[in-house]
Structure formats: C-alpha cells, structure tokens
Length: 155
Image 1 (cartoon, rainbow, N blue to C red):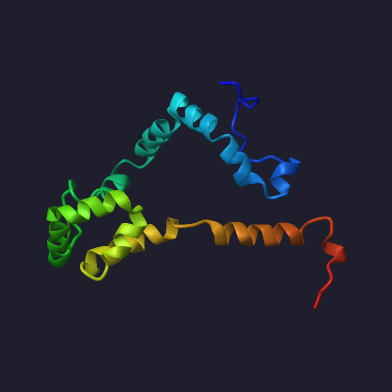
Image 2 (cartoon, rainbow, N blue to C red):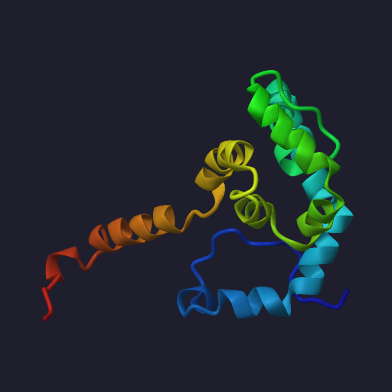
C-alpha cells in the first residue's frame, strides 16, 4: 500500500497526538485505515463477538436499526406496535432512514410517532457520545499530573 504505518495505534504518547493533530493524521491515513478494516474484516469479527457474548440482548433491539423489516418486540404496548407498523409501511421514511444517521432519523420522527421514538431514543442516547467521560478523565489526569503542586488559580 505504500504507507509507512502497518498497525493502528489506540494510545500513543507521541508529539503529534499531544498537539491536537489527531484528525488530520487520521484523514491522511484514511485509505490505509479503510483497507485495514476491510482486509482484517474487523467490524464483522466485532459483530460476531458481540453476538457470542450478548445473543438475546442484541436481538431485542434490531427494530431500532431497521424498523422496516423487524417485527415489534414482545414488550411493546399496542400503541407502540401500531406506530412501528405505520413506520414500516411508510416508504418515505425508508428513504429518510438511509439519508439520516440512526439517532437523527428517530429524532426527526418523534413528533409523528412519539411513543416508539421516545423508547428508541432512551436506548440510543446513552451511546451518543463519550465526550463528557473523556473530558472528565482529562481533567482528573491534569490534576494528577506532576504539575499538581504548582496549580494556580488564574483570573
């Protein structure tokens, strides 16, 4: 492939990471990352491992990923079942799902189908971002650094 990198580093204490150039470096390596993930079939292996460890837990949420082919789960109320059937029969929503992200799709139909959309959003929202967790970890890491005795309050 001509790239000087052969593996994908998850954590590296190198200078380009500390300067905030992560995205530009990932952008430079996008073709290599894409070919690595395809060659190693990383995502398919990851899905296989999830199904191995969580077989039944994953099946009950398939309706979130594809509401057009999955049957309503048994824990749905009749109103939620009716709304999911209405969603699955609407061809314009099928096109909308392909153009939006999963979270964006369910958020866009929450006015028309409030019960099933709220149920879906309660499941998806905890996984929307890890930013808050990472920000708190960074704050604690700074406090625990070698500079903790020299912290000054600046105005």
